Each structure stands twice: as C-alpha cells, then as structure tokens.
Image (cartoon, rainbow, N blue to C red; front, side, top):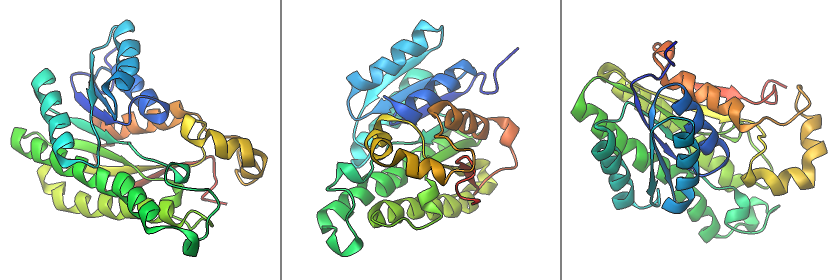
Length: 256
C-alpha cells in the first residue's frame, strides 16, 4: 500500500538528529523523497544514509537557516535534485543552553543571547518559509509546510523568556502565512511538542526529569517518532482542511 506522502518531495531542516532525523525517516517511509538539511552537510549525511539503506531516496544539504543565501541554496538544491518541493518541515532550532547560562530570568539575559535565539528559532523559520513558499507558488499545485514551535509557544516558562518569545513568534508567523496562502493551496501549520527525549533536551531532562514528568498527565517524556508521525500526517493530503493550526503533542502538559 502506498504511503501517505507517496510521490512527494520534502525538505527538512535540522534533520541530523532528534525530531528532524525521525521526521525525515518517517517521511521517507511514507514515500517522500527527502532533502535533509542541517548546519553541516556531513551531519545531515548520517540521516540520509539511514534513509537510503532502507530503500528510500534522500540528499544531504548543509547551511545556516539564519543566512538567507544558504536558505535559498537549500531550496535550489532540493529542486535541482528532485524537481520540486511539495512539503517542508522547518525544524532547525536551538534551546537556551546554546546561547548562554541556563536558569536566567529576563533581566539577566544578554541582548546577544536574545538576538541569537530569535535569529535561529524565528528568523530562520521565516527565511525557510519565504523561500519554500516562493518555490511552491512558482511550480504550482500548492504544498504543505510545518514549522516547529513548542508548548512554549502557547504558555510562559520561567527562565526561558527568549525561547518562549521565539516560539510564540513561530505560532504567529504560521497563522499569518496560513491566511495569506490559503487561496494558493499552500497549507501552513506548526507542531508544538512538549518535552521530548532528544540530544537538545538531554541536560534539562537529566537535571529536572522527575519534576517535568510530574507535570505531564501521561507521566513520561515523548519520543521523536511521536512528533514525526504528526508532522508527516500534517504534510499529507489527509490533513487537507488543516491550516493555521497549532498541533500540540505533549502528553497532556498543555491541557493540565
């Protein structure tokens, strides 16, 4: 039986590990040809090797999502390899530990840390969205884009003001783009993961795992595949009436 993404071409950023790698693998399993992008092409190549070993088709692309020329090149290389882009997962992002000490309140954050957080998590999503939509409009036939937000895009979290601001921005950007391109057949949604076990969350889970789990009604962390399955579905024609949505996958954390 054909997969739900059979015949489609997908571009995934942040595809070297965690949620990005899991989603690339699920998309390939569901029939998509996948362009796996990450900061270093060699890192993305690890995901590509897994896809190709399983009988799928994928290419690795390097580049910084904060650099518009790099983002334009990601899109161009995907089209050069596969002819078009039908769906995209704008997933590249960073956590607080990437920009400075953890546990800082808002008045303790440096402008450099705040700017870097927004540059990757929000401006990077904007640049990817801009160039993906441009390609989809040029080729015709619509498309589907999913941006990685977070439950932090819907609530406040102490000592994470810069991260929360970036993810709230992703939610707003997603909603606005969804309205703008609905008539063009381009759907734009975001996935809002809760606490997921990935390399990016490793230190947080080691430090506060029991405290976090106590706040999750399902009493466990999520795993990357659980986000990947949701993203693949949102990119498929099965989600044809879904746009501008914030799709929460968090074990009940936001509901509680």
